[in-house]
Image (cartoon, rainbow over all chains, first blue to last red):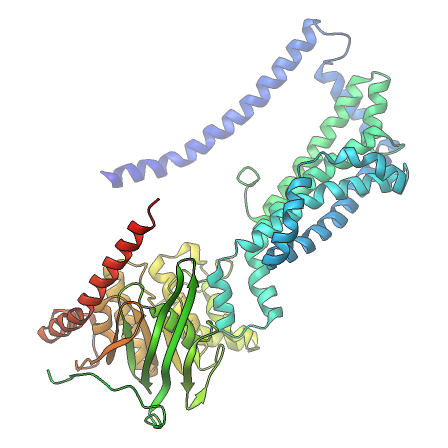
Length: 264
Length: 286
């Protein structure tokens, strides 16, 4: 009897995942349909919900606009630098906290306090320190992604199965060998999960800063489009951002060997 | 039946017999717990002969694992001495290869990479370490599984990977802490056969820590029976069963007698251990 149930479970698995895919597609179709219906209804003030056709046209205009690419590169560079600085520091601090009970007890609490604080409140300070150019956006992005990365690396280091450490010691692995052959591979998943979380908040921090005060970047373009009430253009840029964020998340997720939905 | 005997502790002044590769002298270890200091192990002495299979058996809480950790060099701060080939040892030693009770394969490495690990750490070139690892993989009966990951194997197979990995270290003494504890009884008996066969082929000196009487009698030349807390040597039992052995031996009359004998020694300790942990649980109740 249980065997029969197992078999049916196995047979049901592909159709189950097929059903999930069908539901996912259905959700997109429903959203598109609702959007179009709302757009066509005329209940909303001019262009708040533009037709997807209009948005598509704006997207096409963006695609051939050299200025847009320049702004896109500015934003990507800012996010990349933010992730490199904040992530690098986060991994280093996380390793130190995860490796030392003393440091963890002394300092980690502050990270937990500061972690959930909206980093945008530090933006005025960043502008005073780093100016209105990209540097202040990088600083805010770095500040944003430092906390989740440091905390997940520290937690990941503590989660390493202690018996694996004892195995390494019993085979006389040197401290360098322990780090390279046991600690790092054992922490691959938490580190990459931390980087993924960090990447998300680095984008948030950087773009949020761009929307507040800047003269370049996608955040700046979005606010500019909003200021002249060019909604299709604004939505087109949002779609570009979505696509980029999804692509980056998938990339890190695939590298971590975990599915994007299962993590964090 | 005359094979049973209590052995006197080796007197410290006296040199141990020359065929003893591992000598444990007067080991003692205390742990500080919230309820005060607990003596886990007290005055434990025994020796392991070259090529011998020696088991240390005792009830839960008799400090078996403490003995394992001290001999393996992973437990600092103890009294007494561990000597290998006459030389006193502190810290992990290249003569000793440890197999742990817990799941200890590296999940991110294939079987081949797991078994190669000690050779990799020792700086053996890739081609050679893979070749040497393959020998131990087939010795534990996992030929054909070289490129599988531990998650694709059963618990018994994973523990064989761990044993092969430690054998690849080519230790003088194989030190195992309840390596089959997490496995079911049938797998345990079959793995016991595998261990017997390996021991036969490599003439591997082995020190096994266990709480399983059947396993101890099935595998051992001698069994060190320990008392409940503090862990002391209660008796050393010679198992005079013919070799080579297989798990079929568990049906024989002599086997049953040895099991009964060891249980007789252990019962008192296990009962005391159980009573003390019950009292402990009662007194800790809010």
